[in-house]
Length: 153
Length: 175
Image (cartoon, each protein chain N blue to C red):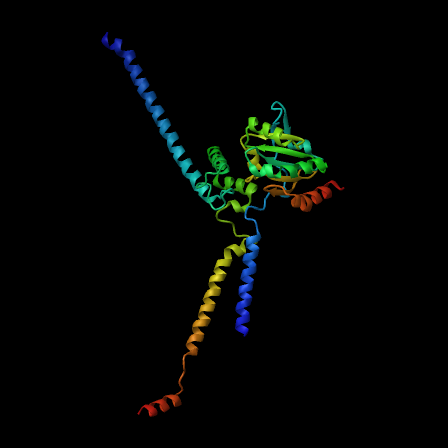
């Protein structure tokens, strides 16, 4: 009698508990999804330039366009697009300049090789100067040496 | 003497390089859209929200797309130039009102005059992103086949119109 009286209540509680658990796991799942999405979005934003402020990444910039593009990144990641597809999307609209790490192409060779060329050139000049300085130091022949020794005696 | 000449030469080359670098405008990022089809849009008109317009309606004509907003001071600066281009009747000038509010854009037009054949309303800037807009105002010349032939970033000036826009439009229209 008692049990039958409480039965609906118990099943109700059990059911709502189960429902709560299900909801909680779903929410956790969504949160985990959100977190990984957020991580991926942030990683992408650090690779992309804000064209308004130019020397900031999308992640750092608060320009209205940067906010829009950040929204685009999140939207497209949530829609299942890959990082590659999203960078391609950005490059198609804003060019290679939007990439913080520009690709190595015929137009960007100087950009990539230039600093190293300057460094090598610097080393070459340094080596030349150092060598000349060593050569410039007075060099004594054996005859000079013996003459000096004689004078000192 | 030879060494001095060398040093001077290197120095002069460096100065030249830096001088060229200083003269370049870092804001002018070459657009990858030149030579590509104008990105499609289908947007409501600014003045008649119930009507829509898409870029295909301009196929067969050379036209100029001018991106502007009432919140953008350089747009006001270039406004007389845009007006002159439109009045000259060289090509139809279509406005793209970018991330603006109707209640601000309409009075702006009333104050400063409306040179546009029509204006599409890109409230959230989505079409702006497709056109690679990053600094309003921006101006595009689009040919009969719907291909972007030229893009100018920043306010349109009389020189730019004279040296770039006018000759290009004339060439494209075959006038």
